[in-house]
Image (cartoon, rainbow, N blue to C red; front, side, top):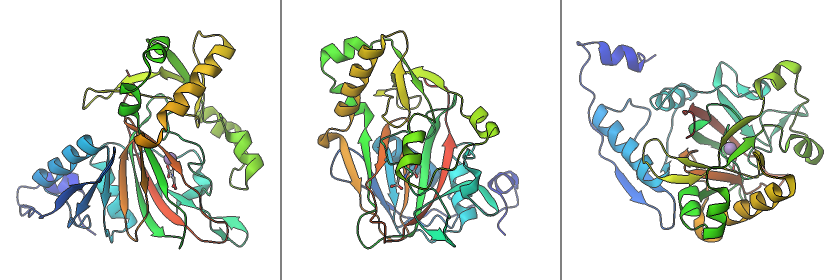
Length: 302
Ligand code: OGA
Ligand code: MN
């Protein structure tokens, strides 16, 4: 067992952590960079961590290739960015690691081992909480031979390119986010969504966030609505709200805003939920797919 980050940094007798030499290679397109040559099974020193952090702010999504890390190492690295969130669907936590949500279409003894329809609608993770997620880290465990891509849309770009009339129409507006926005629909479409207990429902009361948020670290504005969790605009008549949201959703995911991630074995993808929304591209039913997700808590959107 390696000592926790906190202990290690406070221990003056601990040897200095060596630097790793790694490349940050921007991906073509509006989102993302690959990190080549970094090994996250070793604790990063402060300088390497700062480089990774800056690359994440610059590119909104990092693909760490070839990460042979344990669930505990995945959790430890994620925690350096903030506290981790525990998903309301505790059925799908990894045993011994409640901070890890299993995203998988695999059935064992007829029972789902993970959330099989995660990301079926465009969304920003946990936007339905008062403190939505800063970012999520998804680590490939088992990949299908076809399909299973994940798509990401750049919501800074979406905001910057909004038609002026639409930008004016949403100026200063707030929107309601609800975990239950698509839940009934997902229950009808698949077998992945258990009925929620009263206690689970109490944990996912709807919340209100600004339609346009300012990223707390890069200072840029981003659209912060999605078909997955946003149900209506506050103080806007129902039909107008529906029409505006439909326009915002369609604009957000224009092809020029999107990066499609084609998973490679052992990829760890770390995206910024304040800058991006994402979508599961879908996996053929007969092919197995399993990934582990940690989710970092962010702050109150403004
Ligand atoms: C998620 C998610 C999409 C995918 O894990 O948060 O939305 O492609 N996953 O698995
Ligand atoms: Mn997601």
